[in-house]
Image 1 (cartoon, rainbow, N blue to C red):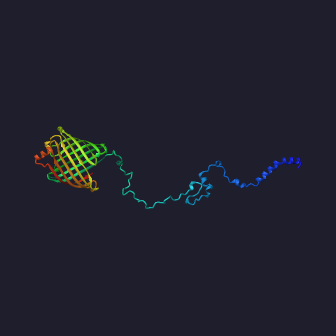
Image 2 (cartoon, one colour):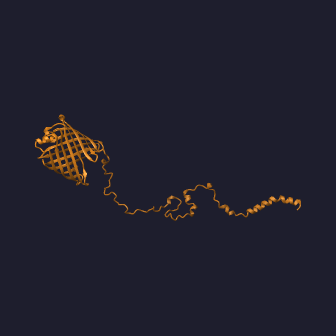
Image 3 (cartoon, rainbow, N blue to C red):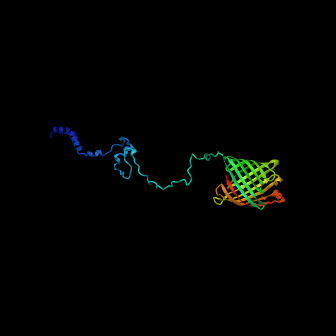
Amino acid sequence: MTWRAALVALAMMPGIVAAQSMKDMQGMDQSTMHDDPPPAASAPAASPADQHDSPDHAGHDMSGMAGMGHTSNNAGMEMGPMQGGKAPADARSGDWSDGVAPMSAHDMRMMDMDDTSSTGMLLIDNLEAYAGQGGHGQSWEAEGWYGNDRDKLWVRSEGDRSDGRPQDGDVEVLWSHAVATFWDTQLGVRRDIGAGPKRNWAAFGVQGLAPYWFEVEATAYAGQGGRTAARVRVEYELLLTQRLILQPEIELNAYGKNDIARGIRSGISSVDGGLRLRYEIRRSVAPYVGVAWEHLTGGTADLASGRGQRITDRRWVAGVRLWF
């Protein structure tokens, strides 16, 4: 090779290299260039429906979702039975009232929802005949009221009669005002009836339920001529059964001045007690039997003894307790 031929070959070398590179690229496998997915950021956000219809789910096994239709909107979706299935037809009684009649709002008494409405009651606690060491006769003990939970007009009376005539007793008319839970103050008047001169008293006291459900009544009295008096009564109801009830009671009377015309001297004049067993045919009707006694004390007992009267009198009683 001459020096001229060498110069020509050197000038043609870059073209020969480029041609060889193009020849090598023709042998490359270009199918692998289409396997890479497009960048996620460049794809538009897909809706839930679009995702549901996406071919990506094509490989999922949907056979376990029986009853669910694969439609393009929720309106056509069909839900299958819930887990556990339907309750048996007799799983619950058709009468869930336990015998209580359904209440109609149309017939409902509105006073049951209004604690300011007025209502009343008459309780004849004792209406009985007695046979005692001092004689035979009848006796009563009753009370009634009318009003609401806060204020009531209260009337009560007790006494006994023998030989066809009242022997001892009184009638009280009181305004009763609630001052605490289960407790009322009472203000009013009392009139003594029966044998001897009639006496009138102003009355003030309290009435209510003491702890352990003892019914307590304590009243002070003031009368003409500086007379004073006091009465305390305690009762209890012991439920032997729901209908058989034992009722003990005790009453104490005291006076501040002598009242010889009515056979009373100052001090504690008498202590009365009773034990009655009643059977409630209904709550409003309850016959009973029992025993009652009266014991005179102090100067009153001395006065009775001087007149030939008994100081202590025990009585067998039988009667009925009524509500109205």
